[in-house]
Image 1 (cartoon, rainbow, N blue to C red):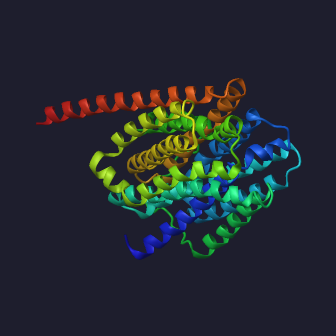
Image 2 (cartoon, rainbow, N blue to C red; image 1 turned 120 degrees about the vertical axis):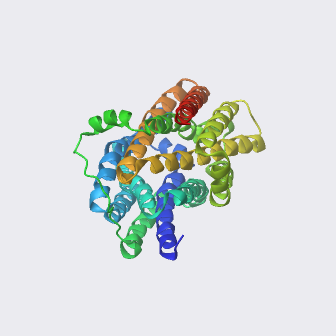
Length: 397
């Protein structure tokens, strides 16, 4: 990659790191913080779902507008909104304010995440796309990995301090992006007829990459059952402190970051994105089920790490395939990608929180079933697609 291209990628990676790091910071703090409001697993699940609901509503809209108006302005505005939501969350004294703050977080993320993915699609060639997406994936993983560790440390000051730190850093990142990030507009943009969100979701079923949007939804739904309740599960079953829990989240995330930075391009070249998706969906489903059977800190760290590594390898593989198939509509495709992810993240935590209040093991069993179903779906589709491609090539020859 050229030097200018690399600088832009580093800025985008930093912004994605700040966004995901802000989410990761609050993970080990939330169980203790919600006790102040006498809230349990169901409220926790609805709070996470509120974030995803805002993303689902606004991601396709923002992605489409960024194709026409440029990427930079949406990234800057999104970081300011996101940071404001974090600060409001720390200032909250009633539950309804928590929900308003989470909605602002989701709205800010809807501005930032699909726009960054589209930006990467703009500045990379098809051959470079896998590397570009893996670097963004690494920043996502690193943010969500380091975030819990930082949150555990900052919570020793007080429980609201992590939220204030995340908010201030996000707003400072907006200033950095406004100053340093060039504004690139898509030269080959194809004007799309304006459609409502519902029509966009229905029309997405006709896209060539629709099967991968289904993967994004089912994968996000299944993983959300793990992410939404693990801190509650570890707190209730083993009485782990926020600092101890943060180490569990950190180990697998760091391993995933290393793989994405140094090995994932070779893995994509050798195995291909589709095989990477299938294998890691299988690993994620098995390790999710194992979490309810293992005991002892070392085994919990090991199983959680394997699950996290599988998740970090699936995301860039799916993002790369969708981006390659999107052509000049990078913002539109990234918006739909984020919308389907948000839809899974919306219903996953609600389901997980409700199931957790019924029985603490049930979210992991249900999440395993969803992930395994997604694995079978992709495997079946890839076999049929390979067979169709073989028959078409045979006719040509």
